[in-house]
Amino acid sequence: MPQAPFYPIIYVRGYAMTESERDETAADPFCGFNLGSTVYRASTDKRDPAKKFVFESPLLRLGAEFGYGDVYENGLDIMDADWQPRSGNRGIPSRSVIVYRYYDGGSALLGSGRPQEIEDYARGLSDLVLRVRDLVVAQEQIRPEDFRCYLVAHSMGGLVVRALLQNPALGDAAARGAVDKVFTYATPHNGIEAAGLKLPAWLSVAEIDNFSHARMARYLDLEAVYRRHGRVDFLPEQAFPIDRFFCMVGTNRADYGAAMGLSRAFAGHGSDGLVKVDNASVWAVDRQLRISKTSPTAYCYRSHSGFFGIVNSEEAYQNLVRFLFGDVRVDIWMQVDAVRLPEALQAQAEEVEALYQFELLARPRGKRWYLSRRTAEEDSPACRTHAQLTRQQASGGNLVYLSTAFLANRAKVSQQDRSLAYAMDLAVRVPDYQLRKRFWPDQHFEGSHLLRDGLLISLEPPLQPGGEWRILHSWESQHVGQATRALSYQALADGGLRLELPLPRSGLTPGLDGKVVLIVSAWR
Image (tube, rainbow, N blue to C red):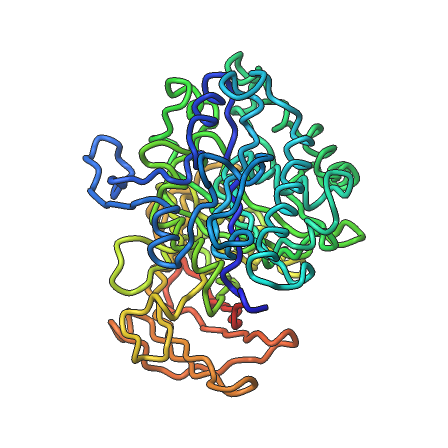
């Protein structure tokens, strides 16, 4: 496919609740994909001043760095009947950004002022994909069956995308087959919660029912899955490959100002101000409705939208372009083999309860942002109970998915160096222990770290298919600043590599034994 990997990008914006918000959306040519930012939160304390960091916008950066352009011509959109391609063109180039303007009809400026059903938005997205296909085929002189596109969506836009992909009744099979990858920002894949309370009036109007489980199960064609699992954040394996569906999750609720702050109050901790962290990613299910695999996911300290929003952030943009155009994929897991309790609790281990928090900061060299950021202070760590880590290992309770990182040759500090390197700050905390349902205060300090170290990884892919990778690593506590120790790997059936790195052992109690597990594969 000669255009690979630079396929057209179709952007699907998020939820506009009121008529005035739909009017604002219709009045914006790019529906927010052109919004930048000059600030970021370096601290979780909102009283601390923000830091200056200029991010021009996803649209501008895609144009400047990868040559993408818009498709508006003579004041018209490609879905307008009298749109004509630019002089000398037959259609549109593959490197185009197309905005799905599904709120035009729901605005008072360009339509009736009344929103449509989400099923209608999904069908409209199908029509847009086919229209883009026809125009790219005409311009690039490729076969229609070779056409591919990317869908990039914010918030409810991700549900529109899933409705198209998962529900055969909501669009054309050719449109679904043309989708190469999907990237979602802050999408409520498992709906929107309001702290377990009845939805307040400002959340009970217009299309808010689109975020309820029963309604989502219908338009996502997941009613059988919902009856079995009680959730709707699932992508059937036969609908779309989970490995090509990326979820970007926000964790900053404090800076989301919608509804005068009521949204973040009802969403509660562990959210971006609207969407719960636990509801913002998807899992695959097989034909027997068994959960099989997680989507690649990353986390950033950004809010649902606004000045500190997730779409207009460097962190999310870097994950977007690495996922679309990157070279190496790394899935980051931790496997806990044994947990060492404080000595006084070891004889009563069956009666101990504790919640372990797993933190990760994945960072490339020389940058002021993280590819993924999960910390206890930001309510975004991965969590496991003591029972899961010790008594439920056979069912995978001791396996902890942390994030997926995509690495890109073009983003390296030195283009003469063939290796791709990054660092991971890893930590495991125990907030407290309970013995027979009562707080146990002895022999530890609340919130202590069982593990806190940095892991440096250097990956050098083979020059030829089937060749050997060169992989180096170091724990920062043992060798600061550079990966120097060779690491062996296990070749997997799908062409990937499995790397196991034993955790540095302190020999102290409390503590844990285990390993970091990295699944590495060539991307694209």
